[in-house]
Length: 114
Length: 115
Image (cartoon, rainbow over all chains, first blue to last red; front, side):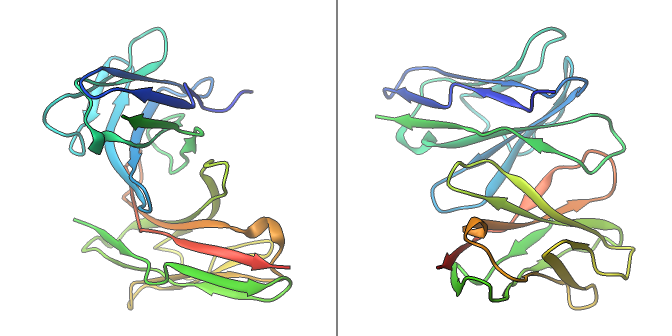
């Protein structure tokens, strides 16, 4: 049973370009979380999604960031018109059901904006 | 809003010794969950140990144990017989309620085990 898969592991974008980060949850998991880790900091919650629904986006910046988790396929975190401050590691976690404290993390995508 | 504070940015200890990492948190919730995660250089976030606030007994997982002081809002991690593979960033985290809530993380402690 493969774990949470994130790709790419490393992504380099020039300022103004779009970044698309993908997360395939563990098999049977229908809940996905995205977290951002700035250099030398802890992880900060961004958004919580179930299939086709955004449950909590209280940690998402108001502009340029969006997330989706379609019925089929991976969850996508999209950052439009990236800026240097978007450089960070982005982690995805998945869990199997609502009544659980278990969250399994992927290895993250390190985004570098040049 | 919940906050999690880790006041030790870096620690180091000799192999085979015992080390304790500190964590304090602030919340008005009565039922919640606390976690310690390990992040080695590979960046993978690995769950080390979990504590339910309604349980008075401290959680243990092999060489890892916690000292949970609910009144003091303190949640420290003790690593016994430390090994080189324990070298990593350690994050304390808080989860409100039960049922797919988000995690609130501290800023981490970088632990180095010295051979």
